[in-house]
Amino acid sequence: MNLEKAAKTLGWKPFRLKQVWHARENELKTSWSELTNLPKTEREFLSEQVPFDSLSIVVSQTSEEGAAIKWLLKAQDGHLIETVLLIHSGDKKAWGTVCVSSQVGCPMRCAFCATGQMGLTRNLTSDEILDQFLIAKREAKSRGITGNLNVVFMGMGEPLLNLESVIPAIKVLIDPKRHGLSPSRVTVSTSGILPGLEKLRAEKLGIGLALSLHAPTDELRSKLMPANTAYPLAGLMAHLRKWEKEGVEILYEYILIEEVNDRIEDAEALAKLLKGRNAKVNLIPLNPVPNSALKRPSKNRMHRFLEIMEKAGIAVTLRHTKGDDIQAACGQLKTKNS
Ligand code: SAH
Ligand code: SF4
Image 1 (cartoon, rainbow, N blue to C red):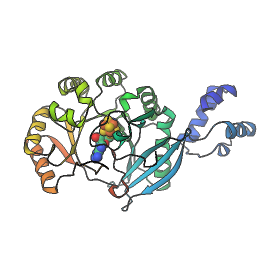
Image 2: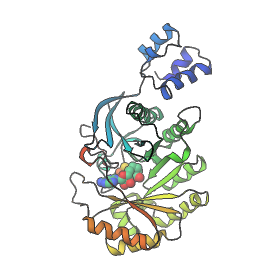
Image 3: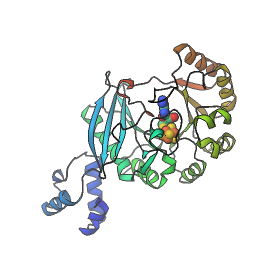
């Protein structure tokens, strides 16, 4: 059973549940036996009936330079997912970004994405989403990382196809009495599921939004991302204006793929599409994907693209790919053994 059900069985008053949340999420206790403010009989009951974590660590890998940690995590039903913690050495103190998964696999089948090759197995529960963050939070603490943690829904899965778990999880992340993250530190990334975007916007959570754009025209985008056929660019870009009007700066992710979307005309079309919008572009060098002919462009071609965007006055960065050696970069999440 889960904690909420156990609380009912034990006839807990609300404050008890809050105590347990506080012990797990703020004091970062890792087992029922450590919750000594609970009666012993209840601790024993919980130890037998309720797994303290919904996910267990199967493998954890640290990248060579130590800037990324990737976990392979196992759910109660044996399914495997991945979570990444990226560590940034700030001016004063180190801070982190936690890349969480929202589904086991993903149904969207984008051509460049390892997760997309798996298809969808199931949605994650909000507990499973939150426990990924918790595992990363414990790690950050053990490494003495005292800066803020950000959460990006850029791991496995399409978060807007699992809003029934994603929205409650975000609410816990930003609840001042729970994890207490500032809403702007949480970013949902989507391949552009329009009905999901509308639903998420209606929640008025104050979070950040990233659109996986990857191509400036419908023709090219539909080739790379089958979702574009259902939700073409004109409708998406018109919808994003509503977020912009509410002060959200949209992050546009654009994976650079040699000779596919990294040509001069692609950069010019992208600049034209985003001109005059509250937009920031993150250019992402393609990470190699198994069984795919798609290639990462040369440094020269990537910088040429970057310069065209800069000259057009678009806020743009070229992502430095941390964790390549352990395949921990977001978007490369595919559990080999599933
Ligand atoms: N499904 C959502 C969120 C998960 S994907 C989405 O598509 O936005 C998270 C990011 O990883 C997306 O920008 C995605 O395009 C990127 N990504 C996927 N495959 C990649 C690859 N081979 N190399 C680099 N980034 C990749
Ligand atoms: Fe799914 Fe995102 Fe990968 Fe596309 S890029 S297959 S939407 S996880």
